[in-house]
Amino acid sequence: MIPSLIRFRTCLLLIMIGLTLLLSAGCLAPGQDEEKPAILVAVTIPPQEEMVREIGDGRVDVIVLIPPGSDPHTYEPSPGLVARASGADLYLPLGSGLFPVEDVMAGRLRAMNPDLAVTAVSSGVEVLGSGDRPDPHIWLSLKNARIMAENTRDALVAVDPDNEDMYRANADRYSARIDDLDKKISGNLFRNDPGMILVTHQAWGYFARDYGLSIVSIEQDGKEPTARDLERLITLARAEGVAVVFAEAQENRREAQAVADEIGGRVEVIDPLAPGYLANMERIATAFAGS
Ligand SMILES: [Zn+2]
Image (cartoon, rainbow, N blue to C red):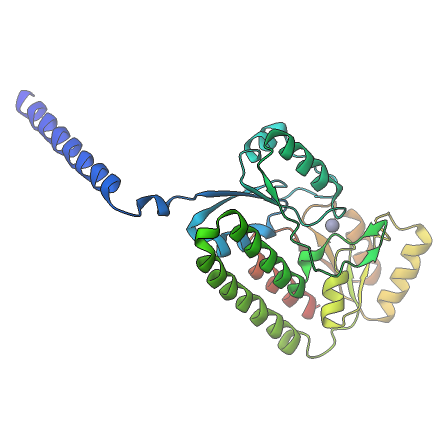
């Protein structure tokens, strides 16, 4: 009993000495602070996180205001999340007027933290839709993503100019990956026109524009379709030989299933708000191409 206790104590002592040495070595080593995230960045939706992390490398940490599985058209961030985000150095909304919750958020965050820098990543993006009904789904275009990456880079440079070179190099690398995927999608996946693509949610206007696709949504201008709309849509889908209805992870799939049953097709679920942006875009494009 006693010898083993002594051994245990000796062992503990050695571990503590070891830890102390390690910690003091860590404190003395130059440049240690650089390893810790120094810039806290708040973003609106999960697809933005990858972009900020890739461009910011180890310098940034990211808070997503609308977590995976939530609907940005209706979501209200919890007071706890807002309080945590108020410690951010930078908020990167998609853009004013796109998702109304962003303007509310920016107002609340600024009230709590007047030093907060706010930069809309859609600056320079051609927004589709009408003035009172802009299409907020700008990230579902790789061409837009490229502009968003540049705006993200510039915003990081503005709050942390000492690391400008690093942000520029990382942004160049990430933009090259965006371009590669864009070329792959236009050159391989959609070399042959897949015909009419049927989705539930009207989110794919930018994507359809980029690749010259016909993407038709069941939802009409953000509203439920009327019985007559549905009838027309089903007739069209049958005539076009549509076999898949693309529903979204965030929504009730009953209507999608009803339409799929009518056309003798199936429902596939896609998630335009998934994290892991580039991989998700490739997954969705592949699903569209194979429909
Ligand atoms: Zn949407």
